[in-house]
Amino acid sequence: MLKEIVSQYTDSITIRRIKRKYKNSLLSKILVNYLLGKEKIYSDDGIIIYEDIIKVKLNKDAKNLLELPKDEIIEKLKKEKYFLIDCSLYNLHSKKGKESLKVQISQSLAVIRRYLFDINLIIINKDMDLSFLGKNMIKVFKNVNEIDFSKYNPVILDPYAEKELKEDEIKDFNLFLLGGIVDVGLNWERATEYLFRDLNFERRKIVLGDTIIGVPDRINLIIKILLETYYDKIPLEKAIVKNQGKKDIINRIFYELKKGSSVDEMLKYINISKEKLEEFIKRYKTK
Image (tube, rainbow, N blue to C red):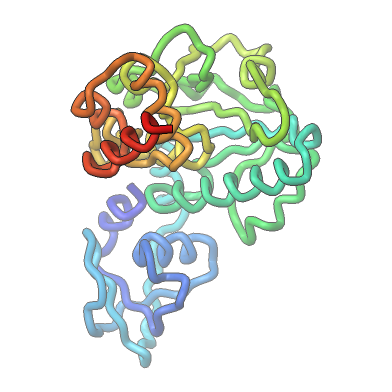
């Protein structure tokens, strides 16, 4: 959505050089760095090196600075989706769990920046050093009660919620609350419920077919699934399967085997080829 908003002000931007970190999501990374004051863009002509709504041109001698209305762009981004990660339980994690949580937060910011901007991420945190995120404009609060929720239509994403998140509800909710919880060496059952125990909001679980088994539990992947469903118009279940990791795939295979599902039925819920699935099942049954 960031690209669409910026396209209201210009149909092209020019840069002097391509940074190595721009290899993927080139345009989004340039625009994010521009809004952060880390990148200059120009109006000079140049060689078109990328095009996605906006043309990106390269001219090492560009001189004419392009000034876009940053405040206006950010105001428009405020009308988009928000994601809140509550890291209040950070100190209860193991060392490995803390590192994993940091990685997931960093990757969450990266995927949000592909579509939106830093202001669309809210973090509840009082113990974690967030310097690993570099320069940013993330909204950080020490306590969830500091937030004015009146301007949002929030939903708590909780694997133990009674109701399923329906695809058409994603457009209605504009703030998705997630627990900053990594299950490494600890039993975090119902931790999300505990984190948001004082908030009387709608609660939903993301399911694949009839169960949460096979749905990625990494924070960044949950956010990615929601962004792809809403902004890229990918059906929710397809986005879930597309983002499955090895653990999610194996867990779902065993679940489907216990149900007695056929290979074709399994393939609807598993990010794996038919050949590899049949090979896995054959090896499993011969053990």
